[in-house]
Image (tube, rainbow, N blue to C red; front, side):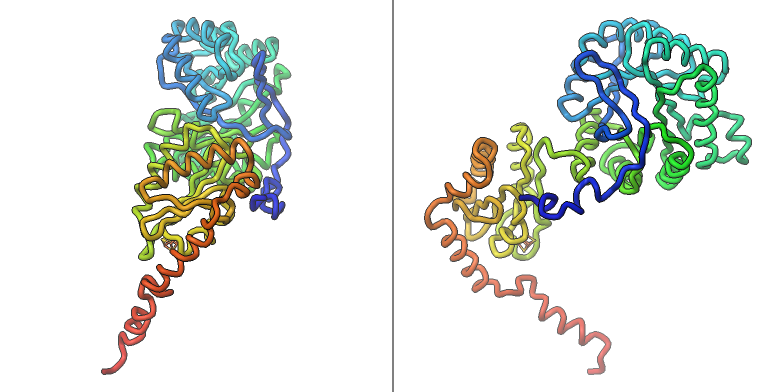
Length: 421
Ligand code: SF4
């Protein structure tokens, strides 16, 4: 039983979702709902030329494999639209066409059969063009994302708010676009108000969620390369998700988009908003007690386990003194001590292996858990494993004492600072 099962208040209901209406991206075999009670979804965007059909499809498959449930492709010219006509029927996930400047490309993408459009209100400004696209999308049952972007804000709004990009301007831009859609009775809409400035992005979405019940697509635009890009995007999106705001998310990273998809999935899993699908590797930060190079072992474990596609939490702990106890909630873990690895399943030591076999043992027992479950794996515990771990633990405590970091003597020295000799 994991932490969420024991404490239901730590589950998704911990972050009650704001109520939104639902739209559906109508992929024929894999329709994806956004908003309402649909799970929060992960999106990403291809970086290939859309006219390169095979290259784009290969990337779409890689993104879907990494957790993307919706993929956006640019539709910036006729060749891209022609590419989309060949990509859409072979894509495993719904395809969104990204449109800037040319409304004709939106019409071409609809003709190509895309499952959703993204329009940037800052770039397509003529009301008759916006309404023509909305009418065409309505007739075909294709939703549109109104994708407001701080960097390409409508110039009139920029001016109106004192040549500044402020949340009110981003929200007003979305509302102006919605008003055009209303005129043709088109409601199949999700909205984003992205900015690269995190506080601006957070406040814009907060304000937007007060004035509309359309589903919201979250993102920090131009977040940059990892790790800073991941941090910025996570700060913005996690803040809003914890307030119940957001129905679909995208990390905009300057990196292989597979990283975006992976990060999106990991964020939702980490917040308990989606069930774990793959590996969650936790590792202690290491300290004076560490009996092994925790960074190297956890990197090797991550590499060896991540391709297995097993929904499992695995812990790599630097010492057997505290490791099995601190990581007792992990499905599987290993703690180092006296040149040996102490393998444990949900806190129960099941096997002791030589230090250089730690990663192999994790792979083997992850397979056992995936095949037979946690209890069956615990039942396979080798005789004497628990006792061997306890003996190593006791020996380490004997060697290092309970205060491996020598905190006691440091505290004495600290307390003496400033005292008169
Ligand atoms: S006490 Fe052991 S498990 Fe905890 S951080 Fe230090 S090495 Fe890691």
